Structures are given as C-alpha cells and as structure tokens.
Length: 172
Image (tube, rainbow, N blue to C red):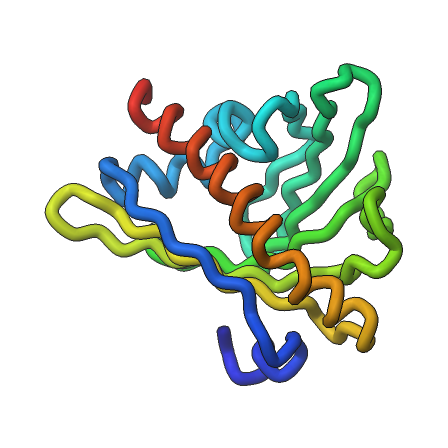
C-alpha cells in the first residue's frame, strides 16, 4: 500500500495469497466485469446481486448478499481508489445499506467501518498469483483488536470465495 494509505491502517495487516491455473487477463475480467463478478464473489452459499459496478477510480461496486437461509440480506460496497490494468486494484471495502451508504457490520459493531484492500495479480507460466493485503482505515482500539482477531475467519471466508473463483475460472 502507498505510504499514506499504510499510515491510516492497523499496524497488523491481513494477507492472503492464492495461485490460480488461469491467465491474469481472465482473472482481471472476473474482478472487473459485473456478469463475471456476480458468479463467484462472496461467501459460499450466498446469492450475490450487483446493484452497481463502476470499475474505475472513484467508482463503486454495490452489492447484496442473500444468506443461505434465503431471508437475511447483507449489503456491501467497494470504492475503487486505484486501478492498474491488469495487475493491481486498490479499494475500500465496507458494509453498506441498500442505498450504498456506510453501515456497521451486521455481525458486530466492533468491525471497522472501512477496510483498505490492495490486490495484485502476477502471471508466470500460465498461472496467476493473487495477493491481497488488507487493513482497517483509522480503527479505534476495539476495531483493531476485532479485525486482527478475525484473521482465521477471514482466511476461511476468502478461501471459500477464492474456491468459487477457481471453479468459475475452470468453466470460463
């Protein structure tokens, strides 16, 4: 993350890396095109509906996640800060309301309002490594502890999401 962005996040970042047997271009399109993104983004068992995807700096990805119970709906959003096709996407992720405004996480008021994410894609020999670094923006002490305490859960969540991406890529 840039020096300014890093200064506003927690001292301890969440990181996850995954290698996909797919070209960087295909993975880039999976992140940047709404019809592709809707097929794999989010927790396993959730149905994603995209309200808006403006894939450009300052643009917004606003989506809903219908939980497996079929009744519960959570809203989320990305606000894109930097896009360097086809290698890097920097975005702020948060929970939101139906209109796209910031909202506290439905599972805990101690979850940070905003999380800065820096995703990079590097390709070698037809395989692409996705690396993601994340940290809360201006967290208070409770939010920092909550964020850092959720690393194992986040690894499982992103692992499931990346499993869905892998399945999508195999059929794309």
